[in-house]
Image (cartoon, rainbow, N blue to C red; front, top):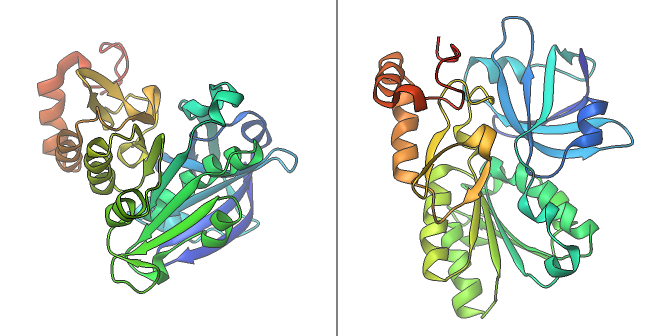
Amino acid sequence: MYPITKAEKLADKIFLMDVVAPRIAKHCEPGQFIIAKTDEVGERIPLTICDYDREAGTITIVFQIVGASTERMSHLQAGDAFQDFVGPLGCPSEFVKEDLEELKKKKYLFVAGGVGTAPVYPQVKWLKEHGIDADVIMGAKTHDMLILEEEMRSVAGNLYVATDDGSYGFKGMVTGLIEELVKEKGNHYDVCVAIGPMIMMKFVCLLTKQLEIPTIVSLNPIMVDGTGMCGACRVTVGNEVKFACVDGPEFDGHLVNFDEAMKRQQMYRTEEGRAMLKLQEGDTHHGGCGHCGGDN
């Protein structure tokens, strides 16, 4: 069992929890994720790691209620426990492996949309701990839906906020704020990292391609089982088939076929759609060998 030491509601339907998982806390890096399961009948839920404390042996997760399993999870309190908490899974963010002196020469812009703020935070924090200040744009529908603002402000070089309704910060989409920073204020960025809803990442990538800013995206929103067996996170990157949970979750955003991925998401939500995808894709439907029973 994995005890919960903190359970907090951040915004409407968005919750934060600290979970005791020493082995994961010891080995995880920014960009990776865990799979949580509340009990024997609970659904496996992949969640990107929001933070970790190696000394305390805890992992911080942030999740949004999107179905029955996350609804049940939202009722857990400090003192309760997860039956399963597996990780770290996925590949760490690329900059973790880069030469630190070369990394310090780059100017990073992070764009966090909604719950995407949670996986952005550990990346910006890691850079800050290694002497690198990154600019961060946080986007939300309204001020009330903004999460982890103070935490992000403490690690970001510059923090900019955009709300769709203008209730706080810049009024409009994050793309409008990117344009303002680059075109009007003359900011230069060597790399952009965008994490949030698929539609947000798509339009950020369309813009950064025009601005000639290499862009990394995290496809954690399309993960379901987290092992490559369900076929949910199958995506085309360039001309190659990839699986977000085993090959990513981070990819070159300018190579991701977002339209295909979003259409596939819609199909995967129904039993008929899943059957059609399995028929169309055959042995490439999931990230295994195609003959191991992963689809059965």
